[in-house]
Image (tube, rainbow, N blue to C red; front, side, top):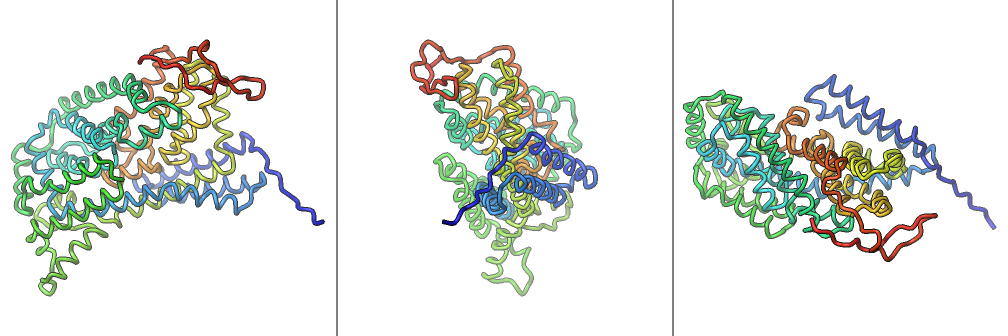
Length: 507
């Protein structure tokens, strides 16, 4: 009988787990130092792949085979394929909505309606309302957010502050919307009810948002728009000269928002919006399309070629105003390829860490000495942030810490609502702050502002985790399981862990 030798896998040491992270931090820091804002266009990808290689070598040392590691990488990349499809659809949507006049119309009316003194606060509030209605920060940023960035350009407002306001509002609305994927995912992982989870989040979310609005209002009043009223009027005149400006141009936006509210998945909804934008361009912007054709291309096929090009390579305008050209010349699936490259590299690195057990070893370090509710909740939030940095995906930053900490919360008599809220406070809203995270890369690709430029102005995203930690240590709105009501428990080692649903507590 032939003997089969099974290679035993070693548990990774803390040093094993820290080496790839130290290498990544060092390489990313060097990348930013050497390449500045261009670091996300190749250098960061190389840093992530090199760090992934270091993690893979450590996994091989500990007994994992390359086939196992490769399987983990493929699985990790597959988790991001949905986001990649959405990114491609958003690129196509921006291209056709520029060509159809949908975004120019939003910019035109935005310049007419928004006052520079209240612009940042209004931007934040508008994005919050839209995101809450449709449950998607990504769709909000790609539609209303893009238009508001154009309005900011027309008013001479700061791109970085405007991007911060867009992201703050979009993530506030996303976080408290029952239509949001992450808002449904967090209670599902923690074992809580959706609307209880939302009500419990309001204690940290609403105060953070109010503070953010106050700060945006202060910035709006303290700063002055560079352009005068005549400059804004000039921008509107140029838009009206180039495009057919009408409320009818907003129909593609209305259709997309309706599809989102009806809970159609993001990819087909955005794809339909992009195709509708192409149809609207043909119907309502024939002069714009004709200006992009040579004399030899004046035909139905030539018109189709312009719309087709806007889907995969965006549009390019050559008006008399260079600023307007820079604002409107964008979009297309090709504009998202660098972001997709970054996502694939980041997900590969995170997948190797998870598959080889290195990430679990880091989390175990976080749990050491966590005795009070404050330390448990703060470590959960920091773990979610760390997972966002390491794995570059907000869904993993919710699922992984949720699975790892669920039993710990039960053992310590902490209601699972504390866990579900912490997963969102630390996972959902910190994701756009990290350049190589799927959300950070997406926001840069859509808003054309680097996360390192807008990070200090994403007031809601920065304040919310800090406020949640303060609540935890002060004991504000920390729910506990009434231990006498615990009737069912299972033994894990020498400890009994309650496994039944905790007693409902009023929030």
